[in-house]
Image (cartoon, rainbow, N blue to C red):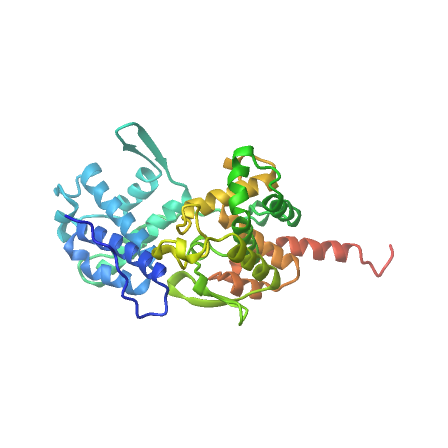
Length: 372
């Protein structure tokens, strides 16, 4: 059968590339739903209308993993396929069965592949998400009167370590300067890396400046289009979690860096395949850069700033943390930073204000009115 091209008939305000990536994730969700038992169908509708697309995909992956566990590791079902699991069998599941699954099985399990046996270990944060997925499912099935008891209240709590501000990985202000110097001068790069750097240094600098100025998520930066930017108005548009459309202001350094890349290094539109023509950041193959390529780029330049190996360089998310702590360090309020970075909870932003508190402590300590 001949491969069909994917054509976007887009009447929304979202760019075609975002519509396409969302559609690919929706299809993955539908594929998983088709494998799961039919009695969960109303729950799928609930997920579709109540959580973000990425959360929906994560929940469904957790649930299908649990169903595979029921078949291969327990006697709670006689089904040989996930689709054949019945509501009656789900009604036999007790809270202790879920606790064994999460606390024992999920903590460490094996995956057999053709070339190796892979040991999978999950930390408490990953276990907490699996618990959240199953809690959501079992509570819904109870409300939908498919299950006779609400066993979710019996699920064991999972203690998550409280984030410590000092443990947050980020670049200091002087390290950001080293990183930006490396992308401008090529210092710290190997001879092989310099061959590519000569062709992409303006692009790389624009990426790093956007990350460290706005604390963009990797997906938000990777999806940027030329049509996202309105230089006359001094702003650009990004699409955040849950489909939020946000206009971000451009400052002079970001605008100057972007324009230099677009005018002096980015290929002419005529030479770019139509599908990638609107993408801001292109690979040397003139295609929209992948998330993996951007991640590797960031790890490379941050490793130079940290004076460490490429493998130990920081991820784009650490540059998000860098932007947050730097903004607070420069005196912006945590509420302004929360709004800029799109943190759901201000408590997340407060973690980055610890160093600001230390500055206050030093000021007060050295400002005594009374002599002893």
